[in-house]
Image: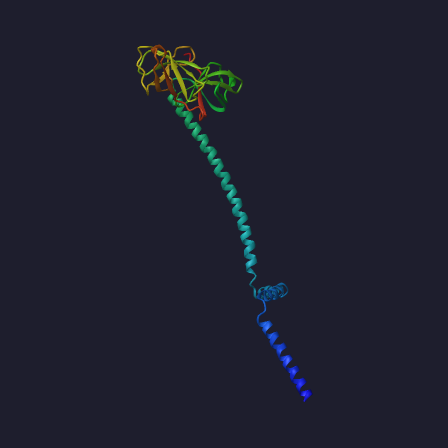
Amino acid sequence: MDKNKKSGIIGIIITIIILIVLVACTNSNVNQVSYIENIFNVFVMPIQNGFTYLKNKISGNDTFFADMDTLKQENEQLKQRNSELEQSLRELEIIKADNEKLKEYVNLKDKYSDYETIPADVINRDISNYSSTIVINVGTDDGVQEGMTVIADSGLVGHIISVTSNTAKVQTLVDTASAVTSTISTADDTIVVQGTLDDKTALKATFIPTDAVVLQGDSVETSGIGGIYPKGIHIGTIREVVNTSNITDRYAMVDTAVDFTKLNTVLVITNSDE
């Protein structure tokens, strides 16, 4: 009896152990399964992929790699073609700019056909509170001399104050040292316009005759008096008239016709004394 009882107890213990193992396996952590799967992927998948590649090789399905090589070659060809097209576009832009410049020169010459002129480009500019000069790319080798008048499409620029063999410096109208004898479209009398420290887009008109009628919007032109500028070149328009307690001190502000910050092309008048 004791022997049978011991056998029964052992059987019960084994049964309990088996149940515990089954429960533990059933409730095992998913992360442990994933870990086993990762081990499988690391060691088994490369072998499987190798067999798959060999199978594709044998089956003639390796055209994908040949297509990739072809696509790479075509991509390089497209890059080269794109580079060539960009270069052509830059060359066309340069030609277009040159044509626009030539067109501007022709328009200037047509507009000022009464004068003998030399075309020039602005290559440097110094527009500050105390001075306003530009440098152009013509000089004595081109027949340019000091004192010659410089004009743009919209009007008077200034005059040449120094010159080298292939460059010239121009004192513009808005320079504080500049003073030009002028006339107003509504008056026969002369006035003087000069640059100011406060505004590099305007001139101050002074010495306005007491009986002269000066109105906003009036045109201001060179008078031809003073020996520098020929008569009739447009300078600008009256922005405002400033009246003072003494009428002899009244003055006007004149907006220049030329935008000196954007000035690129000019003409030098070589026969202003004629």
